[in-house]
Length: 427
Ligand SMILES: *Cc1c(COP(=O)(O)O)cnc(C)c1O
View (cartoon, helix red, strand yellow):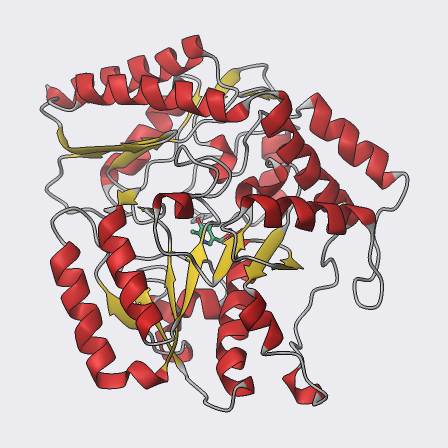
C-alpha cells in the first residue's frame, strides 16, 4: 500500500473535509524548493509549506545543526534550567528585532505565541492594578486556532461554531489603501467608548496573510498604532507570517515608525525545520511582572518550551541569512515578482494584484465574492498540483510565497503556469 492509502485509514488532516478531500499526496523527500512524491513526481513548493520554509527543504546546514544538537542535549525542563541554544537564539533575536524588544518567551507555534502575548497584555494591566479586559483587532485578522487567538481573529466560517465560547473583541477595518481614514475613524470611536478598558491592539504588520494577502498602507497602520499608544494600549505585532524576510525586510515592523510592545514569531523562525514559537516583550512589560508577590508571576509554559533542537534550528537559520546572503535572494525574488505583477495586472480575469517582498497575490474576478470557499480554489489547487506546483489558493486569491532558495527557472515556471491558468479562465 502507498503512504497515501495508509494515511487514509488512520490520519485526520487539518482544515480538511475528510469525506470529500482528494487523497493526501505522499511525499518522500524534499530538496531546495522541491518536494518529491512516492511515485517520483516533483513539485515546486510555491507556498513554502504553509509559509514555514525559508532556506529550502532538508537544508544540509540546518539538518546538521539539529542532528548535532540532538546528540548533545535533546530536551530540558525550562523552569529553573537553561541551555546555550535558548540563550543564544534569544540574544540573536533581540539584536535584530525592533530595539525596544528585550525579553524572549518561548512556546511551540504561532497560536501559542499569540496566546502568550494576549495573556501577558491582560496580566500586565492586572499587575499594575488597573485591569483592562478587551483587545482591539483588525477585521479579517488571523492570529491562530486556539481559543484566545481565535477570539482576536476576524469572525469567519472557521470560528462561527465557537462563537458563544470566545471572548469579545473590538474590530477596526484594516488600513488597506483607500480605507486608512475610515479605519482611523473606527478606532477613534471605539476609544471614545472604552479606551480605559482596552488592554492591547493586535495586528499583522502590513500583510494579512490568511485574509488573502491583504496589504496595508504603512502610514495608515502607523496612525492606528500611534493612537493606541497614546492611550497606553499595548501594541502586539503578530509577525508569525511576516517575520524573517517575507515582506522584503527581516520584520515587517521595520516598515513602520511605531514600534510594537510585544512581537509574536513562529513559522520561519526555525527556517521551517522545527515547531517553535516566540513572544518578545519590552522591558517595561517584563518589569510589571517583577514582584515579591507570587501572584504577579506569569503562570504560563509548555512542556517543550525552548526545546534545544528547535532553538538550534533557529540559530542555524539566522546564521544562514548571513552565510547565504538571504536578504539578497529575497530582493531578487521581490524584483522578479514585481516584473511579473506589472505584466499580468491588466489580465482580464484579475480584479487586483498585490505584491510585497516575496509575496505575490492575484485576486481573480468572481461572482461568488471573496471567500475561502470560492470554487476557483479547488479547481486551481488541483490544476497546479497536476502541473507539479504546490499552490493553495485562499479562495479566489492565488498567491505565491516561495522558499528564498527558489531558482529563477522554477519561479518562471510558476509564473508561466499562473498565466496559463488565467488564460484558461478567460475563455
Ligand atoms: C499561521 C499564523 C498564526 C498561527 O500559527 P500556527 O503555528 O499555525 O499556530 C498566527 N498568526 C499569523 C499571522 C499566522 O499567519
